[in-house]
Amino acid sequence: MTVDIYTYLVVCPFVFIAGFVDAVAGGGGLISLPGYLISGLPVHYALGTNKFSSMLGTFLATYRYAKEGYIDFKRSLQLVIFAFLGSALGARLVLFIDDTILKLIMLVILPLTAVYLWRSKPFNQNQEPHSQNKTKVLCILISFTLGIYDGFYGPGTGTFLILALTLIAHLSLKEANGTAKAINLATNVAAFAVFLSHSSVLILLGLVAGFFSILGNYLGTRFFDHKGSKAVLPVMIGVMVIFVIKIIYDFI
Image (cartoon, rainbow, N blue to C red; front, side):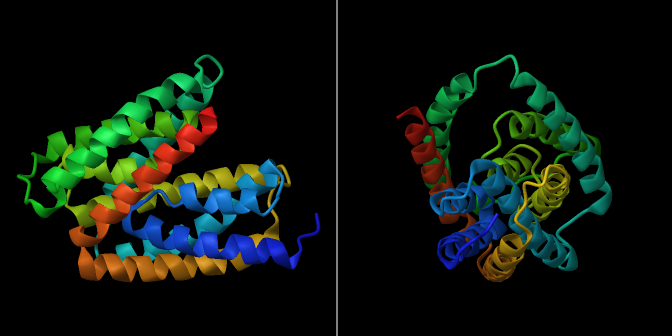
């Protein structure tokens, strides 16, 4: 498939912004994928190439967070396995459950979550850590559950991982973000391999867009390092607003 300069001019700014947002609070796919679709690419090429460029950016963010000590590799490996299992189950559920039900549930949950985050500002509070075993069990349950969601529907999985790992498992915000990136990287690589095997990836466009994704992720990780919770809260609420708009648009 031939890609003209217009496609690059449309896609790359979307991917850059998505990379920045994803590095800070997850949810970058809610921004980058519409960019590919607006450019006029067929859906299967948009999905595959978006996964490629996102994977490149997420690799950079994961590397930087690992370098800063935000990732517990032993824990992350366990969670990646359970996320894969959950994703496989979620993909099967698509065959039996109408995703309209999930979208309606999200339309209720997302605004309530955004209001809660804005009013209580939980990321600014020091939470008492759980015991090691309780933390492990909660992280596994979160990873498996959100893996199901990712396989069934998908948008905003990174954001929900950060939220759940912080507010339920009581990980620090930095460790939650690093762990979420490790999980996202693994699932992105797996999905990219599937799209590539079906010739649904535009390699040159993905590489160019991937450069912008890497740049956005780099600036996003630096922003997160310097601002911490002050950076995450407004970006995360912004992601939720975009998500609600997307769901409403799907119904129209």
